[in-house]
Image 1 (tube, rainbow, N blue to C red):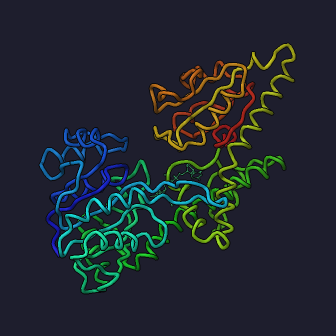
Image 2 (spheres, helix red, strand yellow):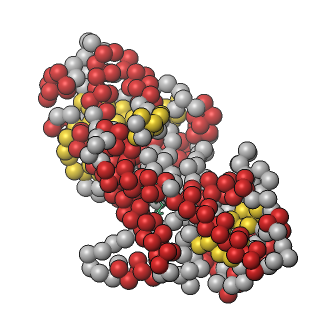
Length: 427
Ligand code: SAJ
Protein backbone atom coordinates (compact mmCIF):
# COMPACT_ATOMS: atom_id res chain seq x y z
CA UNK A 1 0.00 0.00 0.00
CA UNK A 2 1.27 3.50 -0.73
CA UNK A 3 0.83 6.31 1.74
CA UNK A 4 0.63 9.71 0.15
CA UNK A 5 -1.09 11.57 2.99
CA UNK A 6 -0.86 10.82 6.69
CA UNK A 7 -3.00 12.43 9.35
CA UNK A 8 -1.45 12.60 12.84
CA UNK A 9 -3.99 13.24 15.61
CA UNK A 10 -2.30 14.77 18.66
CA UNK A 11 0.75 17.04 18.26
CA UNK A 12 2.39 16.60 21.65
CA UNK A 13 5.66 15.02 22.75
CA UNK A 14 5.15 12.01 20.46
CA UNK A 15 2.75 13.17 17.72
CA UNK A 16 4.68 16.25 16.65
CA UNK A 17 8.11 14.59 16.32
CA UNK A 18 6.53 11.61 14.53
CA UNK A 19 4.61 13.88 12.14
CA UNK A 20 7.76 15.92 11.42
CA UNK A 21 9.96 12.86 10.86
CA UNK A 22 7.42 11.33 8.44
CA UNK A 23 7.21 14.70 6.65
CA UNK A 24 11.01 14.74 6.42
CA UNK A 25 10.64 11.60 4.25
CA UNK A 26 8.69 13.78 1.80
CA UNK A 27 5.25 12.50 2.73
CA UNK A 28 2.36 14.94 3.10
CA UNK A 29 1.43 15.07 6.79
CA UNK A 30 -1.62 16.78 8.27
CA UNK A 31 -1.10 17.37 11.99
CA UNK A 32 -4.21 17.75 14.13
CA UNK A 33 -4.44 19.19 17.62
CA UNK A 34 -7.30 20.63 19.67
CA UNK A 35 -4.97 23.36 20.94
CA UNK A 36 -5.14 26.28 18.44
CA UNK A 37 -2.00 27.88 19.90
CA UNK A 38 0.00 24.70 19.18
CA UNK A 39 -1.45 24.61 15.65
CA UNK A 40 -0.50 28.26 14.94
CA UNK A 41 2.97 27.77 16.41
CA UNK A 42 3.66 24.72 14.24
CA UNK A 43 2.34 26.43 11.10
CA UNK A 44 4.91 29.19 11.73
CA UNK A 45 7.56 26.45 11.65
CA UNK A 46 8.08 26.68 15.41
CA UNK A 47 7.48 24.26 18.27
CA UNK A 48 5.50 24.47 21.53
CA UNK A 49 7.42 21.75 23.40
CA UNK A 50 11.05 21.35 24.40
CA UNK A 51 12.90 18.55 22.62
CA UNK A 52 16.43 18.70 21.18
CA UNK A 53 16.64 18.93 17.35
CA UNK A 54 12.84 18.95 16.98
CA UNK A 55 12.75 22.66 16.06
CA UNK A 56 15.00 22.07 13.03
CA UNK A 57 12.97 19.08 11.76
CA UNK A 58 9.61 20.86 12.22
CA UNK A 59 10.88 24.08 10.65
CA UNK A 60 12.15 22.21 7.57
CA UNK A 61 8.97 20.10 7.25
CA UNK A 62 6.69 23.17 7.42
CA UNK A 63 8.73 25.45 5.14
CA UNK A 64 9.12 22.72 2.52
CA UNK A 65 5.34 22.25 2.59
CA UNK A 66 5.17 18.63 3.83
CA UNK A 67 3.72 19.35 7.28
CA UNK A 68 0.64 21.46 8.00
CA UNK A 69 -1.25 21.67 11.29
CA UNK A 70 -5.00 22.13 11.76
CA UNK A 71 -7.61 21.70 14.48
CA UNK A 72 -9.75 19.08 12.73
CA UNK A 73 -8.79 15.89 10.87
CA UNK A 74 -8.74 15.78 7.07
CA UNK A 75 -8.96 12.77 4.72
CA UNK A 76 -5.74 10.75 4.49
CA UNK A 77 -4.45 7.25 3.66
CA UNK A 78 -3.42 6.59 7.25
CA UNK A 79 -4.49 8.05 10.60
CA UNK A 80 -2.16 7.90 13.59
CA UNK A 81 -3.52 8.63 17.06
CA UNK A 82 -1.02 9.96 19.61
CA UNK A 83 -3.10 11.57 22.33
CA UNK A 84 -2.59 11.35 26.12
CA UNK A 85 -3.88 8.46 28.27
CA UNK A 86 -3.79 9.77 31.84
CA UNK A 87 -5.60 8.06 34.69
CA UNK A 88 -8.84 9.39 36.01
CA UNK A 89 -9.40 8.13 39.50
CA UNK A 90 -8.58 5.52 42.06
CA UNK A 91 -10.71 2.44 42.17
CA UNK A 92 -9.95 0.03 44.99
CA UNK A 93 -6.41 1.40 45.29
CA UNK A 94 -5.66 1.06 41.55
CA UNK A 95 -5.74 4.02 39.20
CA UNK A 96 -8.08 3.69 36.26
CA UNK A 97 -6.96 4.77 32.77
CA UNK A 98 -8.83 7.61 31.14
CA UNK A 99 -9.57 6.84 27.48
CA UNK A 100 -11.51 10.06 26.85
CA UNK A 101 -8.89 11.55 24.53
CA UNK A 102 -8.59 8.34 22.49
CA UNK A 103 -12.37 8.14 22.20
CA UNK A 104 -12.58 11.78 21.07
CA UNK A 105 -9.79 11.24 18.49
CA UNK A 106 -11.50 8.08 17.16
CA UNK A 107 -14.84 9.88 16.84
CA UNK A 108 -13.14 12.84 15.14
CA UNK A 109 -11.58 10.72 12.37
CA UNK A 110 -14.54 8.36 11.89
CA UNK A 111 -16.60 10.67 9.61
CA UNK A 112 -13.75 11.08 7.09
CA UNK A 113 -12.56 7.46 6.93
CA UNK A 114 -12.49 5.91 3.47
CA UNK A 115 -12.23 2.32 2.31
CA UNK A 116 -8.58 1.21 2.35
CA UNK A 117 -7.53 3.52 5.22
CA UNK A 118 -5.22 2.45 8.02
CA UNK A 119 -5.79 3.58 11.62
CA UNK A 120 -2.94 3.19 14.10
CA UNK A 121 -3.19 3.83 17.83
CA UNK A 122 0.19 4.99 19.19
CA UNK A 123 -0.96 6.18 22.63
CA UNK A 124 0.11 3.94 25.50
CA UNK A 125 -3.08 2.05 26.31
CA UNK A 126 -4.53 -0.69 28.48
CA UNK A 127 -4.94 -4.07 26.78
CA UNK A 128 -8.04 -4.09 24.57
CA UNK A 129 -8.01 -0.39 23.67
CA UNK A 130 -7.19 -0.96 19.98
CA UNK A 131 -10.24 -3.23 19.74
CA UNK A 132 -12.24 -0.50 21.49
CA UNK A 133 -11.04 2.07 18.94
CA UNK A 134 -12.17 -0.23 16.11
CA UNK A 135 -15.52 -0.55 17.87
CA UNK A 136 -15.98 3.24 18.17
CA UNK A 137 -15.10 3.60 14.47
CA UNK A 138 -17.50 0.83 13.45
CA UNK A 139 -20.36 2.34 15.44
CA UNK A 140 -19.81 5.71 13.74
CA UNK A 141 -19.42 4.19 10.25
CA UNK A 142 -21.86 1.32 9.64
CA UNK A 143 -21.21 1.77 5.90
CA UNK A 144 -17.61 0.51 6.26
CA UNK A 145 -16.32 -2.88 7.44
CA UNK A 146 -13.79 -3.35 10.24
CA UNK A 147 -11.42 -6.18 11.27
CA UNK A 148 -13.42 -7.26 14.35
CA UNK A 149 -16.28 -8.36 12.09
CA UNK A 150 -14.71 -8.83 8.64
CA UNK A 151 -11.17 -10.01 9.47
CA UNK A 152 -8.72 -9.84 6.57
CA UNK A 153 -11.34 -8.54 4.13
CA UNK A 154 -12.18 -5.41 6.16
CA UNK A 155 -12.34 -1.99 4.49
CA UNK A 156 -10.36 -0.38 7.32
CA UNK A 157 -7.13 -1.73 8.85
CA UNK A 158 -6.56 -1.12 12.55
CA UNK A 159 -3.32 -1.60 14.53
CA UNK A 160 -1.47 -0.57 17.67
CA UNK A 161 2.12 0.65 17.48
CA UNK A 162 3.23 1.98 20.85
CA UNK A 163 5.75 4.80 20.96
CA UNK A 164 8.93 3.92 22.88
CA UNK A 165 11.11 7.02 22.58
CA UNK A 166 13.00 8.58 25.47
CA UNK A 167 12.28 12.29 26.05
CA UNK A 168 15.45 14.20 25.23
CA UNK A 169 16.39 11.69 22.47
CA UNK A 170 13.08 11.54 20.61
CA UNK A 171 14.21 12.53 17.11
CA UNK A 172 17.00 9.93 17.03
CA UNK A 173 15.08 7.15 18.81
CA UNK A 174 12.01 7.57 16.54
CA UNK A 175 14.17 6.52 13.62
CA UNK A 176 16.55 4.06 15.28
CA UNK A 177 14.37 2.13 17.77
CA UNK A 178 12.69 -1.14 16.81
CA UNK A 179 8.88 -0.92 16.66
CA UNK A 180 6.37 -3.45 17.89
CA UNK A 181 3.37 -3.42 15.54
CA UNK A 182 0.22 -5.21 16.60
CA UNK A 183 -2.50 -5.42 13.99
CA UNK A 184 -6.04 -6.63 14.65
CA UNK A 185 -5.31 -9.12 11.83
CA UNK A 186 -2.10 -10.16 10.04
CA UNK A 187 -2.98 -7.92 7.11
CA UNK A 188 -3.48 -4.97 9.49
CA UNK A 189 0.02 -5.60 10.92
CA UNK A 190 1.54 -5.87 7.47
CA UNK A 191 -0.03 -2.61 6.24
CA UNK A 192 0.95 -0.76 9.42
CA UNK A 193 4.53 -2.08 9.18
CA UNK A 194 4.78 -0.74 5.62
CA UNK A 195 3.86 2.71 6.97
CA UNK A 196 6.47 2.64 9.74
CA UNK A 197 9.16 1.42 7.34
CA UNK A 198 8.92 4.83 5.65
CA UNK A 199 10.92 6.36 8.53
CA UNK A 200 12.01 3.61 10.97
CA UNK A 201 15.52 2.23 10.50
CA UNK A 202 15.09 -0.22 13.41
CA UNK A 203 13.20 -3.46 12.92
CA UNK A 204 9.38 -3.43 12.63
CA UNK A 205 8.23 -6.59 14.41
CA UNK A 206 4.62 -7.65 14.03
CA UNK A 207 2.35 -9.26 16.61
CA UNK A 208 -1.26 -9.00 17.81
CA UNK A 209 -2.76 -5.71 19.00
CA UNK A 210 -3.20 -7.01 22.56
CA UNK A 211 0.42 -8.20 22.76
CA UNK A 212 1.68 -4.87 21.42
CA UNK A 213 -0.39 -3.02 24.06
CA UNK A 214 0.95 -5.25 26.81
CA UNK A 215 4.55 -5.02 25.47
CA UNK A 216 4.58 -1.27 25.99
CA UNK A 217 3.13 -1.54 29.50
CA UNK A 218 5.62 -4.30 30.28
CA UNK A 219 8.64 -2.22 29.22
CA UNK A 220 7.72 0.66 31.50
CA UNK A 221 6.67 -1.63 34.36
CA UNK A 222 9.98 -3.49 34.14
CA UNK A 223 11.82 -0.19 34.53
CA UNK A 224 9.55 0.85 37.40
CA UNK A 225 10.13 -2.43 39.25
CA UNK A 226 13.89 -2.14 38.75
CA UNK A 227 13.92 1.46 40.04
CA UNK A 228 11.73 0.41 43.00
CA UNK A 229 14.31 -2.26 43.81
CA UNK A 230 17.04 0.41 43.76
CA UNK A 231 14.91 2.76 45.89
CA UNK A 232 14.22 0.02 48.43
CA UNK A 233 17.95 -0.78 48.54
CA UNK A 234 18.72 2.89 49.21
CA UNK A 235 16.45 2.87 52.29
CA UNK A 236 17.90 -0.43 53.53
CA UNK A 237 21.47 0.83 52.99
CA UNK A 238 20.72 4.05 54.83
CA UNK A 239 19.67 1.99 57.84
CA UNK A 240 22.69 -0.32 57.61
CA UNK A 241 25.16 2.53 57.00
CA UNK A 242 26.21 1.36 53.53
CA UNK A 243 26.82 3.59 50.50
CA UNK A 244 24.06 2.41 48.12
CA UNK A 245 25.79 3.82 45.02
CA UNK A 246 28.92 1.81 45.70
CA UNK A 247 26.80 -1.24 46.52
CA UNK A 248 24.91 -1.07 43.19
CA UNK A 249 28.14 -0.46 41.29
CA UNK A 250 29.62 -3.58 42.84
CA UNK A 251 26.52 -5.76 42.37
CA UNK A 252 26.30 -4.64 38.72
CA UNK A 253 29.77 -6.09 38.16
CA UNK A 254 28.02 -9.47 38.17
CA UNK A 255 27.43 -10.37 34.51
CA UNK A 256 23.73 -11.03 35.06
CA UNK A 257 22.84 -8.15 37.42
CA UNK A 258 21.77 -4.70 36.18
CA UNK A 259 20.20 -2.59 38.91
CA UNK A 260 19.07 0.94 38.03
CA UNK A 261 19.71 3.99 40.23
CA UNK A 262 17.74 5.15 43.26
CA UNK A 263 16.35 8.66 43.34
CA UNK A 264 13.77 10.85 45.08
CA UNK A 265 10.93 8.93 43.38
CA UNK A 266 9.78 8.24 39.84
CA UNK A 267 8.30 11.04 37.75
CA UNK A 268 7.11 11.84 34.24
CA UNK A 269 4.00 10.64 32.44
CA UNK A 270 5.04 7.14 31.53
CA UNK A 271 6.86 5.02 34.11
CA UNK A 272 4.77 6.37 36.98
CA UNK A 273 1.50 5.88 35.07
CA UNK A 274 1.61 2.87 32.77
CA UNK A 275 2.09 0.12 35.40
CA UNK A 276 -1.29 1.17 36.84
CA UNK A 277 -2.92 0.16 33.52
CA UNK A 278 -1.87 -3.41 34.22
CA UNK A 279 -2.84 -3.20 37.91
CA UNK A 280 -6.29 -1.81 37.15
CA UNK A 281 -7.06 -4.67 34.71
CA UNK A 282 -5.60 -7.49 36.82
CA UNK A 283 -5.56 -6.20 40.43
CA UNK A 284 -5.22 -9.62 42.07
CA UNK A 285 -2.42 -10.83 39.82
CA UNK A 286 -0.25 -7.69 39.45
CA UNK A 287 1.12 -7.80 42.99
CA UNK A 288 4.77 -6.99 42.31
CA UNK A 289 3.92 -4.28 39.78
CA UNK A 290 1.58 -2.58 42.27
CA UNK A 291 4.10 -2.82 45.09
CA UNK A 292 6.83 -1.27 42.89
CA UNK A 293 4.51 1.67 42.21
CA UNK A 294 3.86 2.07 45.91
CA UNK A 295 7.57 1.86 46.78
CA UNK A 296 8.44 4.54 44.19
CA UNK A 297 5.49 6.76 45.08
CA UNK A 298 6.41 6.71 48.77
CA UNK A 299 10.06 7.65 48.23
CA UNK A 300 9.45 11.44 48.44
CA UNK A 301 8.02 11.00 51.97
CA UNK A 302 11.17 9.18 53.03
CA UNK A 303 13.29 11.99 51.58
CA UNK A 304 11.25 14.54 53.54
CA UNK A 305 11.93 12.60 56.76
CA UNK A 306 15.65 12.69 55.94
CA UNK A 307 15.43 16.45 55.42
CA UNK A 308 13.78 16.86 58.82
CA UNK A 309 16.53 14.77 60.40
CA UNK A 310 19.18 16.87 58.63
CA UNK A 311 17.64 20.08 59.99
CA UNK A 312 17.66 18.47 63.47
CA UNK A 313 21.36 17.57 63.09
CA UNK A 314 22.17 21.12 62.03
CA UNK A 315 20.39 22.55 65.07
CA UNK A 316 22.15 20.12 67.39
CA UNK A 317 25.50 21.25 66.02
CA UNK A 318 24.42 24.93 66.23
CA UNK A 319 22.54 25.25 69.54
CA UNK A 320 22.40 29.07 69.27
CA UNK A 321 20.16 28.78 66.17
CA UNK A 322 16.50 27.95 65.63
CA UNK A 323 14.78 26.39 62.61
CA UNK A 324 13.98 29.92 61.41
CA UNK A 325 17.74 30.49 60.93
CA UNK A 326 18.20 27.37 58.79
CA UNK A 327 18.36 27.79 54.99
CA UNK A 328 17.45 24.72 52.95
CA UNK A 329 18.73 24.52 49.35
CA UNK A 330 17.05 22.15 46.86
CA UNK A 331 19.18 21.17 43.84
CA UNK A 332 17.05 20.31 40.80
CA UNK A 333 13.30 20.41 40.14
CA UNK A 334 12.90 18.56 36.82
CA UNK A 335 11.55 15.00 36.70
CA UNK A 336 14.89 13.68 35.46
CA UNK A 337 18.39 14.95 34.61
CA UNK A 338 19.17 17.53 31.93
CA UNK A 339 15.63 18.40 30.89
CA UNK A 340 13.42 21.35 31.82
CA UNK A 341 10.23 19.34 32.32
CA UNK A 342 8.81 19.86 35.82
CA UNK A 343 5.58 17.94 35.24
CA UNK A 344 4.94 15.03 37.62
CA UNK A 345 8.35 15.63 39.14
CA UNK A 346 9.10 14.11 42.56
CA UNK A 347 11.87 16.73 42.97
CA UNK A 348 9.34 19.55 42.57
CA UNK A 349 6.95 17.81 44.95
CA UNK A 350 9.67 17.50 47.58
CA UNK A 351 10.73 21.14 47.16
CA UNK A 352 7.07 22.21 47.56
CA UNK A 353 6.68 20.14 50.72
CA UNK A 354 9.94 21.50 52.15
CA UNK A 355 8.75 25.04 51.42
CA UNK A 356 5.38 24.39 53.07
CA UNK A 357 6.87 22.80 56.18
CA UNK A 358 10.01 24.83 56.80
CA UNK A 359 9.84 28.08 58.78
CA UNK A 360 13.24 29.31 57.55
CA UNK A 361 14.43 30.24 54.08
CA UNK A 362 14.23 27.86 51.09
CA UNK A 363 16.24 28.37 47.89
CA UNK A 364 15.95 26.23 44.77
CA UNK A 365 18.30 25.62 41.84
CA UNK A 366 17.09 24.48 38.43
CA UNK A 367 19.71 25.25 35.78
CA UNK A 368 17.32 24.35 32.94
CA UNK A 369 14.74 27.05 33.65
CA UNK A 370 15.14 30.81 33.97
CA UNK A 371 11.84 31.61 35.70
CA UNK A 372 9.68 29.56 37.99
CA UNK A 373 6.38 28.48 36.36
CA UNK A 374 3.44 30.55 37.64
CA UNK A 375 2.00 29.31 40.91
CA UNK A 376 4.92 26.98 41.65
CA UNK A 377 7.07 27.34 44.76
CA UNK A 378 5.92 30.87 45.58
CA UNK A 379 8.18 32.21 48.32
CA UNK A 380 11.21 30.14 47.35
CA UNK A 381 14.08 31.94 45.66
CA UNK A 382 15.42 30.53 42.34
CA UNK A 383 19.20 30.89 42.53
CA UNK A 384 22.24 29.39 40.81
CA UNK A 385 24.17 26.43 42.18
CA UNK A 386 27.03 28.53 43.59
CA UNK A 387 24.66 30.80 45.50
CA UNK A 388 22.71 27.82 46.87
CA UNK A 389 25.91 26.10 47.96
CA UNK A 390 27.01 29.29 49.68
CA UNK A 391 23.78 30.07 51.59
CA UNK A 392 22.40 26.57 52.25
CA UNK A 393 22.79 24.97 55.67
CA UNK A 394 20.93 21.83 54.55
CA UNK A 395 21.48 20.80 50.90
CA UNK A 396 19.09 18.38 49.15
CA UNK A 397 20.38 16.91 45.89
CA UNK A 398 17.25 15.96 43.96
CA UNK A 399 18.24 15.74 40.29
CA UNK A 400 21.67 14.76 38.95
CA UNK A 401 21.84 17.43 36.25
CA UNK A 402 25.28 17.51 34.58
CA UNK A 403 25.67 21.09 35.83
CA UNK A 404 25.82 19.82 39.43
CA UNK A 405 28.80 17.52 38.86
CA UNK A 406 31.16 20.45 39.31
CA UNK A 407 30.05 21.06 42.92
CA UNK A 408 32.72 19.21 44.83
CA UNK A 409 32.11 17.20 47.98
CA UNK A 410 34.76 19.38 49.66
CA UNK A 411 32.71 22.51 48.90
CA UNK A 412 29.73 21.11 50.83
CA UNK A 413 31.64 19.26 53.54
CA UNK A 414 30.44 21.53 56.34
CA UNK A 415 26.74 21.29 55.35
CA UNK A 416 24.05 18.79 56.25
CA UNK A 417 23.37 16.80 53.09
CA UNK A 418 20.51 14.69 51.76
CA UNK A 419 21.87 13.27 48.51
CA UNK A 420 19.08 11.46 46.64
CA UNK A 421 21.17 11.00 43.48
CA UNK A 422 24.66 10.09 44.67
CA UNK A 423 26.18 13.28 43.22
CA UNK A 424 28.26 13.90 46.38
CA UNK A 425 28.04 10.42 47.92
CA UNK A 426 29.66 9.05 44.75
CA UNK A 427 32.64 11.44 44.71
N1 SAJ B 1 14.74 7.08 37.18
C1 SAJ B 1 15.35 6.69 38.37
N2 SAJ B 1 16.41 5.82 38.30
C2 SAJ B 1 16.88 5.35 37.12
C3 SAJ B 1 16.24 5.75 35.91
C4 SAJ B 1 15.16 6.61 35.98
O1 SAJ B 1 14.96 7.11 39.47
O2 SAJ B 1 17.87 4.60 37.14
C5 SAJ B 1 13.58 8.00 37.24
C6 SAJ B 1 13.83 9.32 36.50
O3 SAJ B 1 14.55 10.22 37.30
C7 SAJ B 1 12.42 9.78 36.21
C8 SAJ B 1 11.67 8.45 35.98
O4 SAJ B 1 12.50 7.44 36.54
O5 SAJ B 1 11.85 10.43 37.32
C9 SAJ B 1 11.39 8.13 34.53
O6 SAJ B 1 12.52 8.44 33.72
P1 SAJ B 1 13.06 7.49 32.57
O7 SAJ B 1 14.23 8.13 31.96
O8 SAJ B 1 13.27 6.13 33.13
O9 SAJ B 1 11.85 7.33 31.56
P2 SAJ B 1 10.85 8.32 30.78
O10 SAJ B 1 9.58 8.41 31.53
O11 SAJ B 1 11.50 9.59 30.36
O12 SAJ B 1 10.66 7.45 29.43
C10 SAJ B 1 10.18 6.11 29.52
C11 SAJ B 1 11.06 5.21 28.62
N3 SAJ B 1 10.75 3.82 28.91
C12 SAJ B 1 11.74 2.90 29.14
O13 SAJ B 1 12.92 3.20 29.17
C13 SAJ B 1 11.31 1.47 29.35
C14 SAJ B 1 10.79 5.52 27.16
O14 SAJ B 1 11.51 4.63 26.31
C15 SAJ B 1 9.29 5.46 26.85
O15 SAJ B 1 9.00 5.75 25.50
C16 SAJ B 1 8.60 6.47 27.74
O16 SAJ B 1 8.82 6.07 29.11
C17 SAJ B 1 7.12 6.48 27.40
O17 SAJ B 1 6.69 7.41 26.69
O18 SAJ B 1 6.40 5.56 27.78
